[in-house]
Amino acid sequence: MKLFVSGRKDVFKTLSSLSKNDKTIWFHCASLGEFEQGKPIIEEVKTLFPNHKIIITFFSPSGFEIKKNTPLADYVTYLPVDTIHNARKFIEIVNPSIALFVKYEFWPNYLFQLKKNNIPTLLISGIFRPNQLFFKWYGSFMRKGLQTFHHFFVQDETSKTLLDSINLKNVTVSGDTRFDRVHQQLRQENQLDFIETFKQDSLCLVCGSTWPEDDEVLLNFINQSNDSIKIIIAPHNINAAKIESFRNKIIKQSVLFSEKEEKDVSQYSVFFIDTIGILTKIYNYADIAYIGGAMGKTGLHNILEAATFGIPIVIGKHFENFPEAIELQKMNGLYSVKNESECNKILSKLIKNNEFRKTTGTIAKDYVESNIGATEKTMNYIKKLK
Image 1 (cartoon, helix red, strand yellow):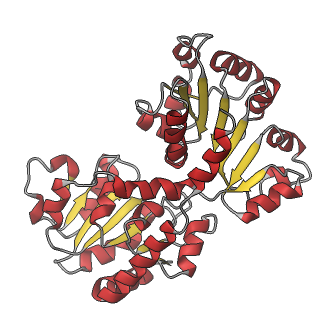
Image 2 (tube, rainbow, N blue to C red):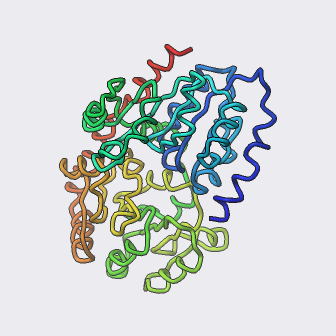
Image 3 (cartoon, rainbow, N blue to C red):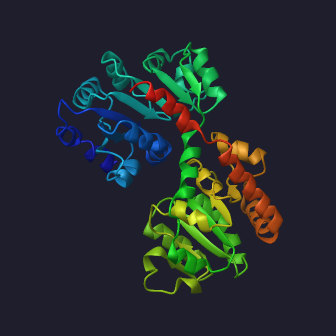
């Protein structure tokens, strides 16, 4: 909350160096996940409009603090709170040629100001659900905000049908740019020497973006697993006290990322990643991935980052709002567990049955590859705005 408040104090001061002659394009992302989702579009837009300055705003500190120095943008700031005064001042200073909102976050005052200034406004990889305010009889004010968009690029037919139900026809089912984003990762440099040293020739389970609820169902498996299995744990929150608390419950020898220079990591069975920004590369070394967030109510983390590497995926029980998880489960490329017993059972099967593990991973990889293309569909429209 402190970062949320203090980070917004200097937004207009930061942007004051923009001149009236500067051409800009504005991207708004709620948080880090939306930034990663929008990244393929940002990269393409930066190439298509080399003389424009890229402005990226975040609502959440978790996005801003991690990406405030991204080379993809000329300015990265928090989005000032959605008041008429802030919206008018922000749009007046930035004066974007195009405004692009990623996935969601619809701030009416900003949208109304964009429309008032005739600025093309697009939604990228949008997703809508029937329980949202737009589709309720009392949601007329928020519907007016949606009416300001020039075009919606949505992930699925359900979203298009919902928008059609409130008479919004300017919609393209483009798919999800996250597929393009994670597929790009295969072309990146994914080598991590210290993970290679840790893993050696062992089978490796990566537990990514885990929460305490995930720790509870994983603990027994970790303690009972064969010593030949290497386990990497990358918690969502890098909290030293919480990591140490979980670490003390594990009977196997464990090491922290922050200790790796002092120790021979190959001698340990469990590796705690007490840093951020390297999980996508770590998935390159995984044979199985458990991805956190769905065992509790915090929300499932990105399963596609692991799927693109052809890894079988295990998640918790609450994933009803994540269409990619629902689809991948139907295809048998992902398995959901409700408790410790189910978790032990599926992880043991994936470890012991090589054919089952490889087949499950191939399904996950094929699923990603069959869904790439949202970036191209979106960019075909943006090119017409140039």
